[in-house]
Amino acid sequence: MVHQEAIPLMTPFKTGKFELAHRVVLAPLTRCRSYGLQPHAAVYYSQRATRGGLLITEATGVSATAQGYPETHGIWKQEQVQAWKPIVEAVHRKGALFFCQMWHVGRVSTNVDFISPDAEPGMVYSKPRRLRVDEIPGIVDDFRRAARNAIEAGFDGVEIHGTNGYLLEQFMKDGANDRDDEYGGSLENRCRFAVEVVDAVVREVGAHRVGIRLSPFLDYMDCVDSDPATLADYMVRQLNRHEGFLYCHTVEPRMAVVDGRRQIPGAFEFLGCYNPTSAFRKTFDGMFIAAGGYDREEGNKVMVENLPRRFELDTPLNKYDRSTFYSQDPVVGYTDYPFLGDDNNHISYSSLIIIFF
Image 1: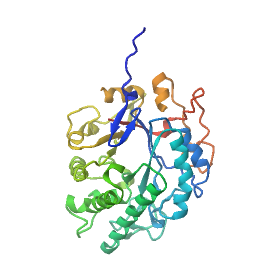
Image 2: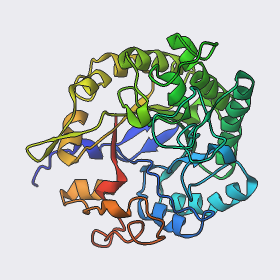
Image 3: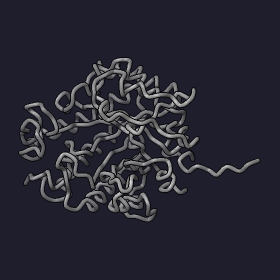
Image 4: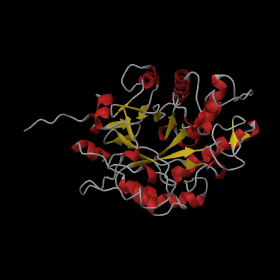
């Protein structure tokens, strides 16, 4: 018999009550094709499901005023809960786990009444108004109720969207938050809103069903922090207060391309992708997920320990067409990527590879 070297990305992993067959996750990617959650969404997600794999939905609004892009999903109404059920069932029939990512865009919207921690947006959007302190508990409750709805719809868990310059991150980062009340100023105050959301969601559905996505080093939507490492460390310690908190999903800084290859900026070494003793991974008690420009070689390197099918066979990923990423066609650039043989494994670079360990 010919000995075959084990592929790190293909090793199984157990976290909490969930048993995963491999270390590759379908990342959340806004698709702007919900149309009220039509059947094509079930096709899209089930195409990308593998037995023992983990899928995270595209960002899904927690309220009508949380939305910021056309035809994005929601989970605040019973009609939406019912519409999600057949999509979740389609993924479960393939043997995969399915988590719902919950978001509120804050100032990143064209809605004239959207809210923000600060007074002015950093990009060309409708001018937001400052969120009043007495409104914050209502938004915390929106996240709590959305989490309950997601579980009712059949999802295995939820991911709190705290990245990419949206509402929670607008509060967390000192480059966006200029408040002088209990939700501004100090690191603890700036993170208070996000921590309250985490606490409420955990109380509602249990820490074992909850993850969060953070991007401390990212400066998307003019959200930047003067000390991202300290911000990351503080938030991780808040997650650790909840025994069994499932995962922390962290976005790397933008990838640079040098000599035709993606280069991972040194800042993310702090988060542990190349240094197993780094502070961020060492501090966090749960499963760690890293997102940002990985291919098979880089993924195996950071693991050291079926997109999965393509990685297993070492075959190329589908070439993406960036112009179709955020179009609203229900097929083109959405469900029309070619299969690999007969295994129904529809994966492209546009799916954003995530490695977890």
